[in-house]
Length: 135
Ligand code: CMP
Image (cartoon, rainbow, N blue to C red):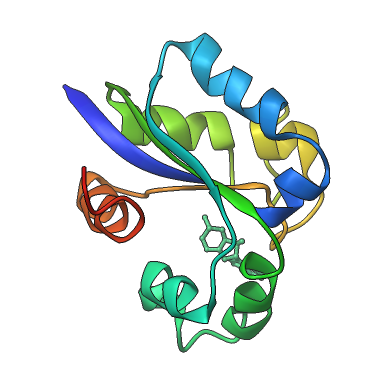
């Protein structure tokens, strides 16, 4: 079934000059770009996006990181896009993510893991509403 999912290329991806490389992987897979915009967010947007993590010990440094510079927010569309993007992204921790995935190939960190992808169709709908409310 055709789905949409929200992807963030986090500030480490922009700082490291990996935006083109990462977008190329989604594009080559056959996913299409519905929306794409570079933004620098404040803590308000970070807290809405990561609402489920607000009380976690890792959240304060994560908030600091995601607000530390420009990121690229993307809505991708395609067959089973939520699961497909999660597979392309790889496991959360770049140190253990499988080679061949974005994080497995390009990240050595559990926090600065380059990308975010919605974890379910329900999360995708919620997150797209935060980032691209006009869609
Ligand atoms: P993301 O897929 O955006 O979802 C939550 C984010 O929190 C995750 O990617 C990482 O950037 C970060 N994260 C999750 N777990 C940890 C952790 N144990 N330590 C540091 N950062 C984490």
